[in-house]
Structures are given as structure tokens and as C-alpha cells.
Length: 472
Image 1: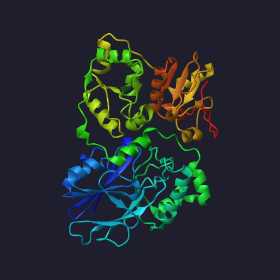
Image 2: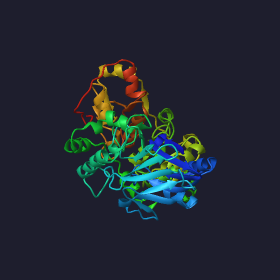
Image 3: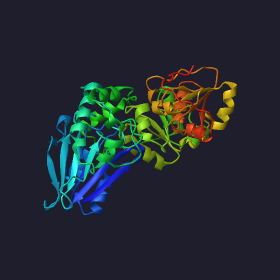
Image 4: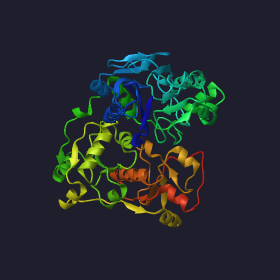
């Protein structure tokens, strides 16, 4: 058996290629499918099967394009109501991978509703080695150290889904032998769960002993814990799920991206002051000089997820980058979450804007050491990390307002006093600074290195179970 995991760090997304005797299956493909075609060719495999463990909400899947290019059949949970040609999966459905179908790899479906109603898991058995299962591909049902969030269905309450998830975990997955390997569809950083560990695989036995959600004593308590303090759900999640229900068009169908001159971008801003200018350069470059009103989401981090969550998939942004290669990379990564309609990109980037004599804005930055000194002068501090990070440790004087919630409500900050903004390392705080500057706040300061730098310097910190939501 050939088995390979493909991990897309910017989306914390794992997909898989399983091969045997000339045939292959792809599980949960990302939107750009060339990597699977290349790997299959290198292994002399023909992709015959495409499995979707559920209708993904955090990215757009490439299943439809991959099927068109390979002739493979798509297999998805029967409850998905998929609008493209597919084979509906129910409990016990099996396929054999391998042209000879003798001693082949067997893939068996388990219906595991809970994260979504149509969720399935795939039990993989390499019959040439053992009659016992080798691995289970758990989609977003069971993660490493966590389980899927139960609030992504418009047809079910979180409580209903959490109850189904408990049943799926305890009656289906935990019935598998402890030695079975666990391969989920996401890792640490994904918003599809809350407390995923950094490892990219585990075993049923390890998760049985260490996964907090599997330690919860009763179904009722499981439902209560899984539905309490759920992280903010980006609005684009439900839209991406619907795109995946129909199947996305091929990336090659996207039209060429037009270049816009500084004068054209300026005219666009005059016509629509709320037009989205998305600056994808590193935070330091953005801080040094940027087009006024632009939003900085750097390519270096989980760019696409933050762009989808902050801007939404219908935001029609203009890209600002240092090179055309960055423009192409940004466009691909945006398409992975469904942001396809872009107005264009600023030809020549910020350098061309400055050369045209147009005004630039700058964002002030300070170090953690400088912040510690300024606290004595009463500077306000805003922490934009997620709730679990805040509760684990924070600056005592800080107020908390997670960046995830900025699209619903910007924090209330004082109009006269300076506000230092920090996250874990400086990536999210620069996004926050740019959003606040765009809203008219000129007194925000980014803390370079974030809370990591504060903690490394040994400055005082505290913990809390009741975070404040605004900065006044």
C-alpha cells in the first residue's frame, strides 16, 4: 500500500492519497489538485476514487476538478445532498483499491454525524499485511487532541449535533482497536476545533487516553462542554459548505487578474471609500509604508483563513504585493477559501504608489520591552488572541477582544490615548491595527513579537476565566 499525507499549513488542512496495484484514492482534496496528479503519476497510479469526509466549511475542495481530470468517482456521505454525480456513502460501504482486487486495500465507510450531519470516517485496511484495520481517516470528527465543532449546520442545533458526535465517537470510532492510526483532516490552528495538538497523526488508543473530549463522563456533559464558549464562526464557513455541495469550478476557469495603476486605484477609492485593498506584504513592510485604508494580512501566516474570516468571500479586494509572484500566490490561496472575484492588483505595489506622489500611511511599532515601560505611563493595551490563549496568560492591564470577532464588532477604544495591540507573535495584531486604522483610529501601535516576546522577557502576566470584551 502507498499512503501519503499532504499537509497545507496555511489552512491547517490534511488530505491523503492511498494507492495499491495501480489504483489510487484521494481523500479530502484541496482546491489545487496538481499535487495529487503528480504524486499518482510518480507512483504509477490512476486516481479512481475521490472521498469527501464531509462538506468542508473552511476551504473549497477540488473534488469536482479532480474527477473531471481523472474520470474518478466521487464518494460522499449520503446526507450531503451533493448536487454533482457521486456515490452516496452509508455505514459499511466498501471499495477495494487495486486493479487486481486481490490482496487489495479496503476502504470502509463509517457514518459519523456530529461535526456535520453527513460526516463520515474511512477505515483503511491493507489486506496484504493484516486483516485488522491499518488506519482511520477521521475528517473533522476526531482530531488529534480534540473533536469537531458542532455548530456548522443550519438545519441542526449545536446541542443536536454534539449529541450525534458523542454517539459517533463512542459507538463507531472508539470501537476500533487501539493500534489503529488516526489521520484527521485538520491540525492545530484550524477553526474546525478548539484544542488540536500539533501532531499530524495519532492512534485510537492514544486519543482514548489523552483527548479531553473523550474523557468526558456522560453524553449530557459532553453536549454541555462542546457547546459552551464556541469560537466565533466565520461567516464564509456556510458559504464554502454550499460551494462544496455543488462543486467548485476548475481554477483554470478563473479569468486573468488585471493590473491597476495607482491612479486607477485612487479613482476606485474616491468612488468607493470602503473598497477593500488587501496588502499581503510582511507586517514590517506594511508598517513602514502602505496605501491609506489598506488591510494587512501577510502571506506568511494563515493568510487565506484570515482573509475569508475578516473580508468574506464576496469582498472583491485589490491586492497589494511586492512582486507578481506574491500576487499569484495570494490569488491561489484566496481561491482555496472561495474568494475568486478580485478587482485586480496594484501594478508596481506600494513603490509605484509612492512614485506617483500619492500619500502613504505608517503604523507605529514598539517592542515588548518598550510596552512594559509605557505601562507606567498608563498606555492602554488590547489583546486580540483567542479566548484560550487569553485565559492561559495575559498582561494584567490588557483588555481582550479576539480578532475573530472584529467583523461583527470592532473594539471600543479611546479616541485620545494610544493603544498598544498585541497577539501571540505580531501577525494578528498587525491585521487588527490595519482594521482599526481603516476605521479612523490613528493612535494604534503594534507590539512586535507579541505575547511570546513579553513572556520570553519574563514580564508579569496573569490568567483569567472572565475576559473583558472591550477596551475603553
